[in-house]
Length: 115
Ligand code: AMP
Image (cartoon, rainbow, N blue to C red; front, side):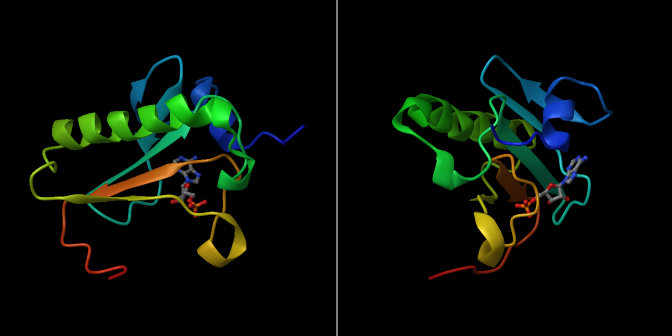
C-alpha cells in the first residue's frame, strides 16, 4: 500500500487549502508556493504515488484531469493567454509529493521549456 501524503488530507478537507474544484474523481487546489499568478494542482482523489503506477483503469480519470484543467484555466481567465500543464515523476523531475498531481501554471509568460 502506498503511503498517504498531505494531499490525502487536503482531499478529505482535514487541513486548510484553497480548493477551487472537487468532484468524485479529482480535487484541484492552489499551490502553497505559487510559481506563477495562477498555480493550481489537480490531483486524483485516489492515491497513485507517481505516473509509473498509473494503469489502464485510470485512463478516464487522467483524461478528466485535463478536462478539469481546461475548465479551471477558463475560470482563471488564462485560457486565451495560455498556460502550461506539468506532471513531475520521481527524482530527476523534482517530484516532492508522492501523490500524482498536475500543475496548472499561467498568468505570465512562462518561457520555453522544451522545443
Ligand atoms: P512536485 O514538485 O511536482 O512534487 O510539486 C509538489 C507541489 O506541491 C509543490 O509545488 C508544492 O508547493 C505543493 N504543495 C506542497 N504542500 C502543499 C500544500 N499543503 N498545499 C498546497 N500545495 C502544496
